Amino acid sequence: MEPSNQRPQPPPLTFKQVVKTVIKNERESRAHQLFRAYPGHDRVGHHREGVRDHPDEDTMPGIMSPGATGVIYCTDRAMANGFKYGDPSWANLGQGAPEVGPLPDAPPRPDTFTFPEDSFEYGPTTGIKDLREAVAKLYNETYRKGMPSQYTADNVCIVPGGRAGLSRVAAVIGDVYTGYQIPDYSAYSEMLGVFKRLVPIPTALKAENKYTMNLQQTKDDISNQGLQVIIASNPRNPTGQAIKGDQLKELVEISRGKTTVILDEFYSWYLYPEPGNEDKFELGECLSAAKYIDDVNQVPIKLNQGSFLDGGANHPLQVAAIPLLDPDHVHKERIALQKHFLAKRDHVLNRLEKMGLKVAVPPIATFYIWLDLSDLPAPLDNGLTFFEELLKEKTICVPGIFFDLNPAHRRDLFASPCHHFVRLSFGPPLDQLDKGLDAIERVLSKANKEGMGDIGKDYPLSPTMRNLPEWAEEKAEEAEGGLRSLVQKIAGL
Image (cartoon, rainbow, N blue to C red; front, side, top):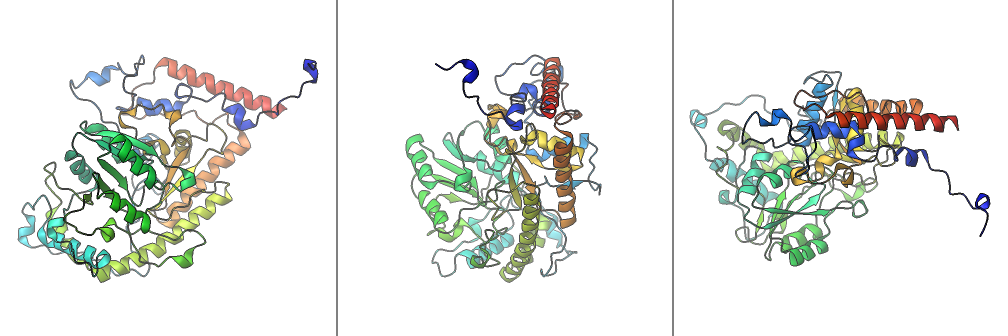
C-alpha cells in the first residue's frame, strides 16, 4: 500500500460544488423559508415550532388557506419589494398573459360595443346559444372540414375563465385515479389538492424527451395503475412544448378505451417553428384534439365542461365576442400573432444565450421559456433565490416549483424536479422584455464581480406572511456566514 502522502489526490472541488455544501435544504435558505411562511404553503403533516401553530392561523375556526398560485405569490412578493401595477420602472416577466395592444398586420380590433337590452339579463351557465354556435362553426371549419360528425352548440360550454373551467372539470371527476404531468400549469395543483375525491397520480416529463408525454408510459400507467382520467395542457405551460400530429392523434386513440382525456388547449394559437426549422412551419396553423375525433358525441375526450359552481360567463361580453370568431378574421389574427410572438421569442432566446443561459429546449408554443438555472453557482441555481434576487432589480419571474404539481405541498422543495427552473414570459411588449433581460444581466454580473456574499439575504417579509421562527433565521444566517467564509477562502487561493 502506498504511503498516504503519495496517494493520488482527488481533483479540487469546483466553486459550485463547494458552495452547494452550504445551501442544501430548506432550513438554510431564506427564500425557501419565505415560501413556507406564506399561508397555506407549509408541508402537510410536518409539525414545526413557530410555523404550523402560529396564532394567526386560528383567527377563523374551520377555515384553512388554500395557498397561492405562482403568479399570485410572485406578485405579492413583488409588492413587498415596492412593485405597483402600472409602475414603468418594473418589468413583469411572470404574469401569464400576452400583450393586449394592436399587433402589426393584424385586422383592426373594435374598441366600442353596442349591447341589446336583453344582454343585461342573466345568461345560461353554459353560455348563450349564438356564441356556442359560433365556437362550433369555428372548430368545424378549422379542424373538421369534410368530416361527417360536426360540432353543434350542444357540444360547447362557455366558462368565465380558466380557473372556473378547471373547477367545473374537477367537480365532475369521480373517485378515480387522475394522471397528470410535471411540470404543468400551476392552477392544476390547487385543483388537484382541493377536490379530495380524485386521487392525483404524477408523471415527470424529461428534458431529453423535450417535455412531451411519453404515450407508451401513459398506456402502461393506465394499465398498471388504473388511471381513469388524464388531464394535461396542450400546448404545455410552462415548457412551451406541444403534442401535435400523429402523437396527438394517438392520444385521442387512448381515450377510446376506458380513460377520459381532458385537454386544456388555451395556447393552441401560440405556435412557432423550432429554431432552424422555419421552412417546416406554416404561419396561421393551430392545433386541437378536435381534429382527430371521429364522432364528437361519443369519444371520451373533453375540451370544455359545464357545472353548477359559477353563474356563467359575462352575458354582454359573450355577445361582443361573436363577430370576433368569424373564421377568416381568426385566421388573420393567428398569422399576425405568430409573426409578432415568434420575433419576441427569438429575441429573448438570443439575449439569454449571450448571457450564458442557453435554453436547452426552446419553446415551440405558448409564450413561456422554461429556463434551467442548474449551471449557475448556488444559491442562484434555484428558482426561488433567483426570483428574489430579480425582485431587487425590479423584475418578476415565476420560480419553477410552482409548476411541480405538488398537491398539499407534500414534497420537500429541494427534491422537486422543478427546483432549478424559472418561467420567463415573453408575452409583454418588447421594451418590457428588454428591461427584464437587463435586470437578469445585472444579477449575473453582480454575482460574477462581487461573489455570492450578498446573494440569498435581505428579503423582506410580505404583509400576508407569518414571522419566520427563530431557528429559521439562525440557520439562514449560519448558511450565509459559511458561504461568505468559503468565498473568501476560495478568493485567497
